[in-house]
Length: 263
Image 1 (tube, rainbow, N blue to C red):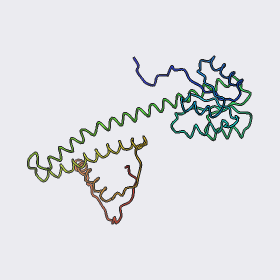
Image 2: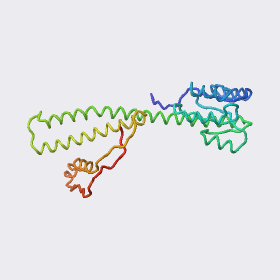
Image 3: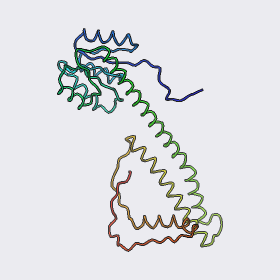
Image 4: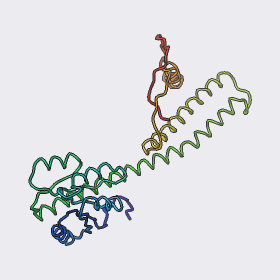
């Protein structure tokens, strides 16, 4: 049995129709209800915004020209509200190329001209709903991927922290005396493990940043020290393959360059 979360949804699409003409609302409502859609109505822009914020619909059919708050202003405010999911907006406008360009520029997804042809309206509604479902599925896949990576990196920290503590005890002599060669090898293992732990922690911080719970700032990094750490970490691999690995730091590093880091 397929339990994929991305199986095509069987829920009924809900459409908000916004028009200051009751007759236009009634005609569009009747047509779309015959196609099986759930229809909500709003008589003006302010009412439409309130409904959208309270219960975001799957699609908005929006008359461009209305008193007090026209469809362009409604579109602009919807697109500026980052708390809303993606909602396709179909502008209903008179034949005016400039008004069409204006609507598309501020965030409308499509338009249809008056007088509305019902077949064309249905085709555009179906097209925008496909777009809505595609965007929703993409966002859900991205959310699940981020959740998976976040959980994975969190789980990876446990064995890395345990290994770091165990190697620290060994360096302190808790397991008995060690030769200098063994201590040197263990030092490299500790640094490698700490580098991996740092990468895991950084990955977690990246997801926290993308979720809006972290900010970025500039932090100084000494490139010479960084190059030395990389050389020490790669030396065992180079030695195993019989390759020479040398660090050449002829240039003086008087000031650490500033790079972007997560905090």
